[in-house]
Image (cartoon, rainbow, N blue to C red; front, side, top):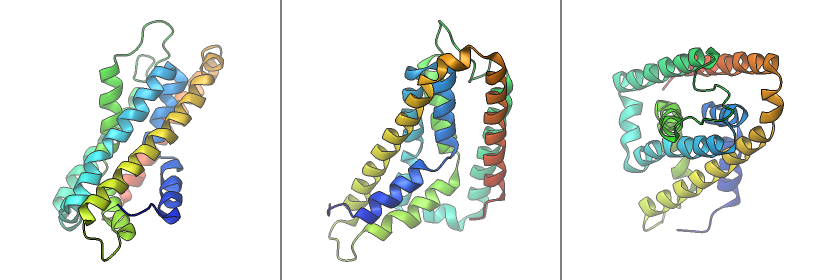
Length: 205
């Protein structure tokens, strides 16, 4: 794989660091459940983009881009999931409940984190348009190069999300000591999920 260009690294960092469903979920997990859950959430959200990158590399994203039905099915599944997450966030026993002793099963955190990014068809189309820009025209192994770029992007995603989650986890004790703050945080995260769901619903191919 050719040397990574500064443009690729900078663009990837901007994309990864921008607030989105994965970042919000990881921060919420850190605030309500601590460092372990935030690390799991960061890992799960990173895994959730793997199928989109695979689709971009193999060309399946082009099918999603061309097929209105396939795009709509995945899109509205994603919208429904985000709205469900918003509703669950408002519940005291939902996925963002504050844990003092017992921890939520790692499997539950992983499934939620993967699903959040998996059910977003815009990611496949984004990577389909994004990755080829950094593959030289004369590259003898473009698939290998795109795979390498994808792995770098995923590594950056995990690191940035893990930092977000770790910072949030450091604030956890303050959150647990203030029930009113926790209530407002739940509402804020729920509103964020609703807003992201609305943005996805209005997105065009």
